[in-house]
Image (cartoon, rainbow, N blue to C red; front, side, top):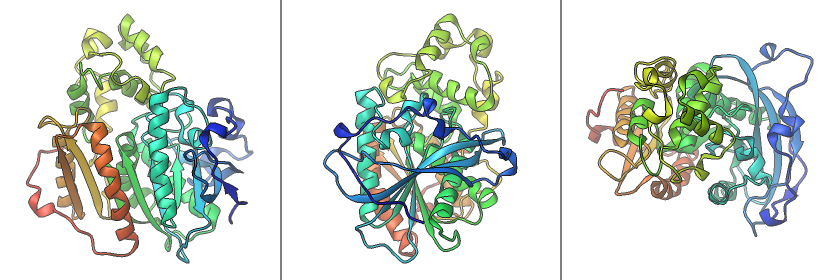
Length: 411
């Protein structure tokens, strides 16, 4: 089933939609209990007009789907995916699907891709620029004849950086897309791509798919700027002038995923910082102030590797430790600006993750960009993801460099 034709309109002229936190479309009110509904089931749908970059008038069919998914703790929940179907580009009889995982890094609903793609104002020029850059990537996939589905994988409560919840949201968004379009999961080829916060959803979806969504025909995954180990990642950015604002934001996002009140663990200053970030798009906070763990948390909780609840929450997000592992070729890429990482994520841990997947028999193409920090590395990574996924869709044999990666470090 395809929805009526709509045209992409310039963002500056788009009528602003209602913020998701105030939009009843994002709430399930049906008669059935959510736990009785299969994950990936479409609960609501609506046609939307897109604001996919000023001056771009490529016609598409665009629909938003509210669907049932699963939270971090295994409980049923809902979120929204935006589905884009090109109409003036040659498509295969069975179209390919790109699950594009945005690096929206949101703690407020104004950051949701479903909101910004439809012309919503995120309220910050820095994040608005990043959203525009992602829209160019989405447009490229559409120009190749691919269907693109963009899930709000953090869920309606904005559980930023929660691994399993993000992975479930990504997989169920693809399920919902296939169901709505009447595509058979066994025949439609699926590729996934995500950078930075988007890599959380991408990696976890690839890990969880064999057990959670084995029917999906995932043929390739590209992930870059990967936070493979949260303990190392937060220690790396602790006190950083550029990325230390991520520390309170990530703890807040995870606390939402686990239903934990952070207040008893925070210093008075920490409470102020967490409150200030509680409705933000994190791109607007990076580089604006410095956060140190010893200023944020009370003394008994500052050792994140041992102090609960943080040791449990952060340990749960370690990539590569799920009971299942990816079954499809991977492209993993990282900047390396200081022999440790890209300023935000540890390249050492990303390489260890790649080596771990290699040991599981997964074809992994791993690449580092020497001298490039996190944002610049995104500019190197993204142009490689499209050709990588198109080659997977075409059935080309995967290329890997597992034999030259070395042993790396244990996860």
